[in-house]
Image 1 (cartoon, rainbow, N blue to C red):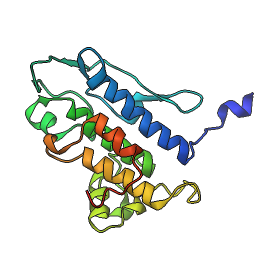
Image 2 (cartoon, rainbow, N blue to C red):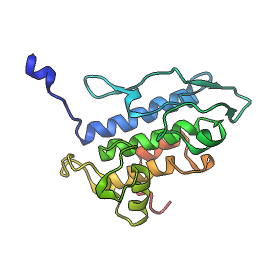
Image 3 (cartoon, rainbow, N blue to C red):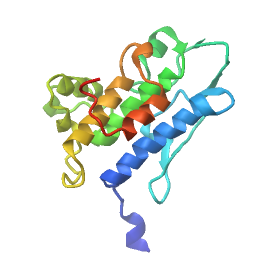
Image 4 (tube, rainbow, N blue to C red):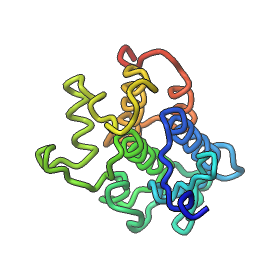
Length: 197
């Protein structure tokens, strides 16, 4: 057991897909299927725990808030983790379920790229991950964001591009333009390209 316990397992492309979809399902449940809307407020990679078969579980509800049925958002002081927090929450203290959607988009970009959102890469002109992802997307090169440690034989470039596009939809500056988590699930499960949407 000694050597096995020290070996760090890295998920393959199918497992990464399952993590991305499973996390979206967990958030959709909190936002739309539970008897009251729960806003997690601190979605980040370290709060997504994986079991032995790489199935994700959302953890650490210490900052969670309930959104009453008769309200579209709450006003609150800033809480969360910089780099994952939506601008309307960080700047104006406006809290809605779309705050979690934004954080989810950042997490997906981290999963795809194998980079942390706050890391500045010297070879990327000092850009943070989200900035780099948007720039690559605008130039039609977002497949370059993929973690080079992933086996390119395991995934289709168009599938990766679609997932990156969904993540970028989630990180739009305007909360109203971000999809709901149930819409994210539909988009992830769809096989059609988002480029013509």
